[in-house]
Length: 362
Ligand SMILES: [Zn+2]
Image (tube, rainbow, N blue to C red; front, side):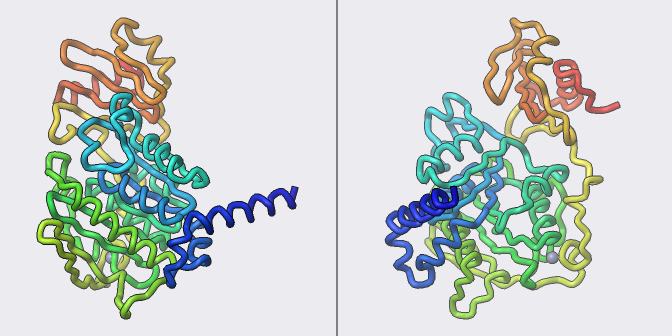
């Protein structure tokens, strides 16, 4: 048994030497660097435009274990700005995390990829993110980043913040465990809703891939401890302009009175921090329902509750039910739902409770 394991290990090493023959020639990386990357476990939160480009680059440079977390499904409008996704994924409405994982396995079948179809919340963040060496931000909202930041400070796990809008982007390696500032040292006033940029903001794909490239370069430098000109990476915030073609940077300093890294108050991880159960989805006529932890939906139970004729589709991941003229509900196994055709939160909650039998409020 042991001999067989040794043989398969050395087989993998031989394959890696061939696969990465041009990468290990880079003096800061070498065979040792590749072997190290093979052991790295990275989490990519958000598998949209930036997340897919980041995930692809991570796997192509040899990161051996990747977790991809996303709650959404591939849509035709995602294709132009993402990597990895295909028209077929959109036609079948495959969950982004699953489509991303499948594509990554096609690039390198030896990579351990774990797709997680859910939304990162204060309730699940610690379970989902623990055990990773680095977290890369592919999200599109401030709330998720604040949750990641709290996790990063609390457990000393570095993360790479990214953001893209139109031609511009930001990237910042946040590493509080090595004395660097955290997100809340810079963004001192963050309301839950205020700075959230929603999908309606345009984005140019070249800005996305530039941002992803810088993010993965920073991750590589961190993971392999590659220094360059004594630059203080965790204090450097990069600003990318894909129109003018430039990358500028400024320094961020740690604040002693920072609620997260200074006072170690993790309000975004705190389980008592209540997320809104129902929220209108910006830019659409829909409401998203996110119940608390442990409230998964059994499609079998729902089938017993609703008129069979109203069931529009059932897939491995979703169940869509017509509620009334122009109003439908799409259920996800993790308990979430999207009610399409209304922006009325109370109506959405009523529909959800009626269809699933799950009480969202007493
Ligand atoms: Zn801080």
